[in-house]
Image 1 (cartoon, one colour):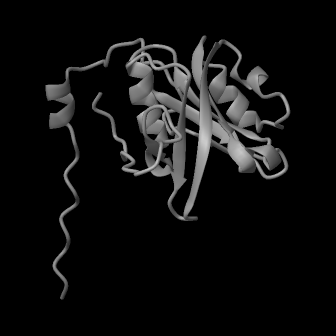
Image 2 (spheres, helix red, strand yellow; image 1 turned 180 degrees about the vertical axis):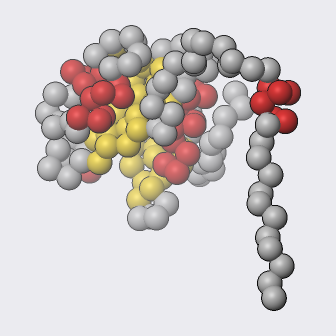
Length: 169
């Protein structure tokens, strides 16, 4: 399986099913796992800027109402608007395990469109008092339904030239 992963090379028994997930590219790696039909799994996650390593269970959820998966959060209006544009989503729910997970009970959510290539849509999670909401810049917009009014070759020929500068005296 060719994924953007950092493989863990340990002498002792590994505490993960597949690999060690680098948090900086988690959304891309999870998209690749989704494309390979990997649903629920466990792995270690590295948070490089903090030097942390956690064991995490990932569970795949398919839903038409992603906000109902975690009702404890107070979602911003623009976040709600963007998530309601698609009918169904895949959500990877990340749950920290081990000793840290015993004390830190909050989960994290990564949302993907339900059609291939399963584009990354949004992320949120952690303590509801300190939650961060992230969504992609594309606003989940559907392609324009009306064709362009003029062919591209004609449109490109109408690009205005920059104004010529007057010579300074």
